[in-house]
Length: 264
Ligand SMILES: [Fe+2]
Ligand SMILES: [Fe+2]
Image 1 (cartoon, protein in one colour):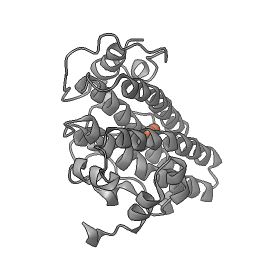
Image 2 (cartoon, rainbow, N blue to C red):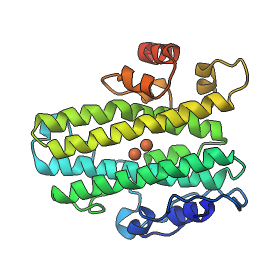
Image 3 (cartoon, rainbow, N blue to C red):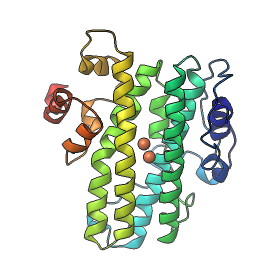
């Protein structure tokens, strides 16, 4: 499938099933077209972005013994995955001149995000909450609107949001497991493994696009748009091994692990 058509279908038509199933993985990129910055993704009526703070907050781990609380967590995470998918489609449309290898690599990752959306939506429904029956936020989408270059994208999405998710996925896996929900725990571990590859993609492209002799940490800092910052790129329990498995240098992982709020 042609990448522009894929990105346009994900972003500009509202049907969820089509958004998360389109794309055959046999990519072509013959007409990337002119740069287009889409301000809002088209979504069905039930998945429209809610006003700030109208969407439910992420349930505390202590309440996850209640199936409905776990369903809400999956509902929120399904919307995170959908926003990641839409953010990547936005990037394909906004930067038609990006290297073709980058664009095709990102389309492959989008297939994972489609699958992740479906997994969380199905799990939420199984636990009693249909995807779209609660308000959803637009935090990730709004941040993406500020990206002015492929390096901004790489610094912000794979290396902040997906980087932090290396920690969050295993924190949730443990929390679900603690209340005996092994299916939800297994789902989080699958996403964790995929996320290592997504972070690898971001790390590799940051290195490829950096100027010669530039420190990667400095490139990252230069391309982060506040409030995205190193503290947002990690969760409570720092998964050092996962970051090394994603190809990050020991030096970078050390710097991130030791980074504290007073360093900002
Ligand atoms: Fe994902
Ligand atoms: Fe991802």
